[in-house]
Amino acid sequence: MSIPNHPKLADLIHMPVSDLVAMPAESLALLQDEADEALRFAKLTKDWIDGALAVKYGDAANAARQAAGKDTGIIRFHDGAVTVIVDLPKRVDWDQDKLAAVVERIRADGADPADYVDVSFSVSERKYTAWHTDIRQEVEHARTVRTGKPKFRLALGEEAL
Image 1 (tube, rainbow, N blue to C red):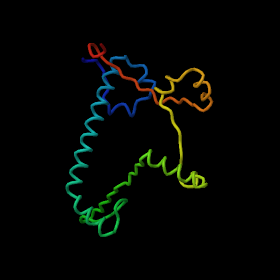
Image 2: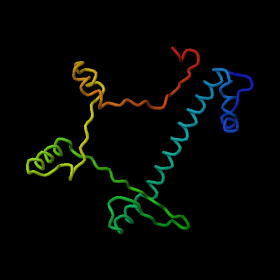
Image 3: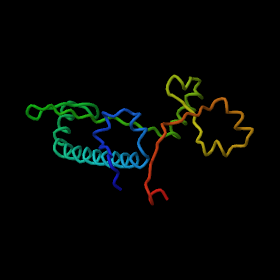
Image 4: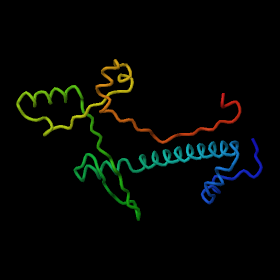
């Protein structure tokens, strides 16, 4: 679709929001599609570069990490004038059933589990809506509903069907 005087993405950063708001929906839809494609391309490019860096520096990073006696965290080494900084974050997952058993043993020993672990409760919306009204009313005071950021998608022509 060709729209006369259709702005380019690069023009948008200099354009007041009021000018964007005044544009026809078709122009906004095209701009949104262009921005989505630019974002997809940028993410693909970033992933491609990150993959190349992992291949180029993976062995050196592992050696530097081993020499530093670190399994995770940030290490630094040099490639010429460039300092290569590699962060290997630590991700910890806990087996909830096993952890619950430990909490019960702590409680049975007369200690307060809160001194050792953080305990939280949650209810999925699916389970909540399946509860009987009496149960839902009982926990309603403990429930807070927040909304996320709205997402708008504009589709042109047949794509909208």
